[in-house]
Image (cartoon, rainbow, N blue to C red; front, top):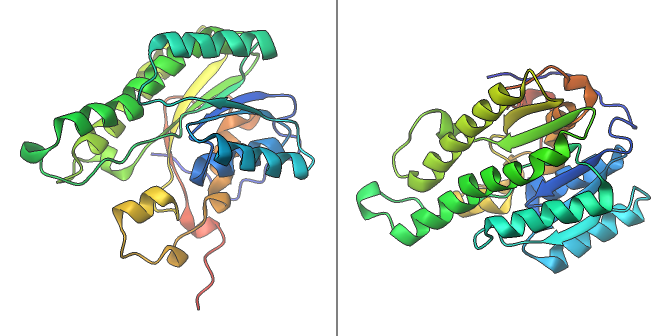
Length: 259
């Protein structure tokens, strides 16, 4: 595990970089899309909900940042042909890809393994593990065209040590961390691509509220307050960092106001 402290990204950190963000319609994905754009990137925002993506698009445009792009896709039902089509579109429109943030995820439900719904197990692994593999596989040729490319996976505490009832979600996140490490090892010596994971910890998101409905979201940091690590790994300052799982130092971010 690694963490960074007191990182201050330059305003033009991601100038002219092309970055794809999955799950960009809300939560950490939306915050990352806006943060990347605010630091100069052209962001391709991928999610299921077009209206939500359009709202984030408007926020970025109204803030005067580079014009983003919207790419609607349902990762649960997408086949490899859909990912190939996406890669072809990106190559045609942008010519390369400098960054990829795997943020989209499905929680599923807390339940014992012997009672786990089989359909939900398959869907959770599809979105959280198979989709990042297929998207990475389709986009790697575009990232090889970049002079300095970064892939970021999203980890979780339940990926690091198996915990009762977390079933498919825990298994999928552990698999995604392993996938990250395999990719990093394969790409380290002969490509400009680095690959890492971020474990954001407890953050005030819709998924967090679903898992812990009794928790006061005002006690948690908001997604936009944890972006320093995302900016660090997506930008040139992290060149040479690969194969690591980064954690967020919650003591280094603004704390929610107490009422």
